[in-house]
Image (cartoon, rainbow, N blue to C red):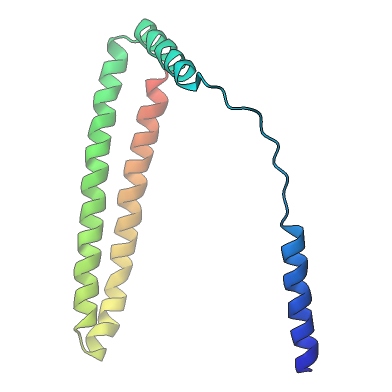
Length: 130
């Protein structure tokens, strides 16, 4: 039985090694790729300046606020998680059982914070296009 398993493993390894060959066909790299990229970025900036107005500035301020709140929310979630983890490590068996029950509100609160901020940021980005 051992010989059969070893031979099967060897055969599988050989088949995997043989089947991993891939041919890559590439063209000569464009020597002026930086110039093309700069032209493309400049074109995008010009288009943004043409279509940019007062409404875009309003939504960008909301987007900045959403980013700040996102950072604060993640910081609070991580800080609470670390505190709960440290308490869990240094608690007795009875306290560990009660802490597992108290973990449900932490998880639900984390989902609510991330979900609410995610929805808000999604709405700001969608309304920014209008």
